[in-house]
Image (tube, rainbow, N blue to C red; front, side, top):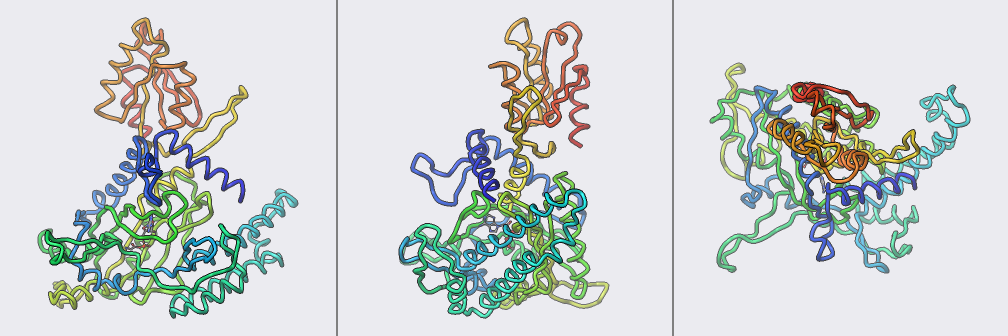
Length: 505
Ligand code: GAP
């Protein structure tokens, strides 16, 4: 665990040092839980967004994309349930004056038990070597079973308390587990209260007339309220989907773990409208599609798992999370929810406008059912960066940090490097650069030794370095160095573009 924490700290400082992600407003000492994407982070984020959009919108003839406003009519949030129920249970420590989410304190306690299980597994794996069967071990080892049962029992009670809003029992649970404040180390807790996560502001030019409105806490409602507009103008037939990406805002009580939980973040959501009774089929379809999307990036399959929800929100009839093994353990990366006709029915009720679809095959009108896929773009950036960050000891004894970002979403695809800054090499390198620039994000670097320049490109995850040397000047060939293997190949200048395009496919 300590090792993972150490790695995570290194990733955060690498992200800053190499221009991926900066703390917001840093010269004013920062703003908690808000981050700015720097030159490489912004490219990475854009590439992930484009990759999602391409797979969800471009590759599906029955899905279209929209871009709705961040501000919306305040009644929307009443209808969606956010005004009354988008709450987190908060608890304060009276000594440190720090505020926590009660459920997060309990989850952290369970994470410590999970770490103990992991330790037992590692110990046994070392002891039994190749003969070790992990599945059998976790299902039979007494200590592991004890930890697992405790986690199960604590989670069951916590979920029950959250569902029934039994905040007194939730506090009792914290007391029984003897959870202490990480800052003060004391157990001097306040009662638990509900805290609404929406940010509000005022619109209107005269303050007395100004209306309270909210910054959207999810992009989904912008899709629901445009459902009929899109269906009619796009002549869409059910089943069909509407996708959108954009900022969402939540006043998270505990915003932490870098860009995992932020107060301003970006979502990529798709609502799939289908006929009542077909939603479970589509739920299974989207579960598979979304997992396939993740796996298509080539990150290890073992880093992903489904977490099916046992307890469902009152409007859902099925829900699962795709969890990713971040440096701090498996956590939610994406949610897939079968939301029934809840949202459209509520908007129909609150707006007084019919939000129905006439199904010519069934010869009836109905409020469509919805299956939602919802992924946090920042969380996806973190997943990619956590998986990519690698420290390597090389054969010559030197070390390198390399960001093994999947090539198709890497911030820059190619670096063009003259071996030395003389003999016409920079001029030739710039010629090549200008040919490649319309096709790929490229960098040009001529300062420092070639070895140092390779290291810098490794650190920002550039998959290909093209080096111009004396042979280039005499024979029109260059070397291509591949980031992960560091293997070098000699190819002719006119082959460079197709060579890289082929590798990025
Ligand atoms: N429309 C459904 C919805 O918003 P959610 O589970 O609250 O569901 C969906 O959020 C996804 O948005 C999450 O799986 C996560 O990736 C991302 N997300 C949620 N809150 C976040 C936050 N505070 N910071 C970063 N990402 C967040």
